[in-house]
Amino acid sequence: MNKILKRTLLPSLMAASLGGVTLVPAKPAAADDQVLRDAGIGAVTNVVTGAVRGNGSVLGNAVKGGVTGAAVNGANGLRKHPRHRNLGQDVGVGAGASAVTGIITGDQRDTLGNAVDGAAVGGVIHVLTNHR
Image 1 (tube, rainbow, N blue to C red):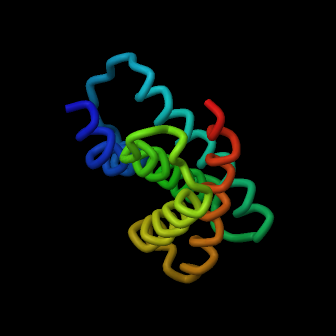
Image 2: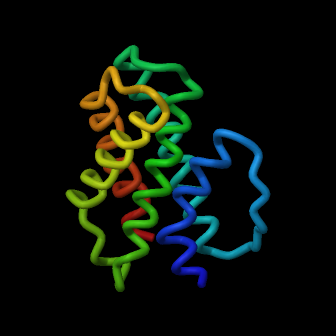
């Protein structure tokens, strides 16, 4: 159940909990810590890239980055062995997740920019967590 939750439900729950209050039972586990770590890395990275590009609010960029980080973590959880992580796949998942999250949150003006921000998030997560 933990793998199913991590792969399918957790990115959606992260998006919902950032938009409002959600009660999610929390249990301490290494996988949960990794999701939170990647969501945090994504939020910070997307805030920085949004500020550099002058796009969006800090809160909006943090939400998109957090969801993107959780999506990259979920994609990495699908791999059978941690060494099979691929920079191109992480960048691609990040770009797609950020573009879709931007559309869902109403930031449709700059879908390509959102994809660029998400690609940066995927790249940073890959670089920071690849050797763990």
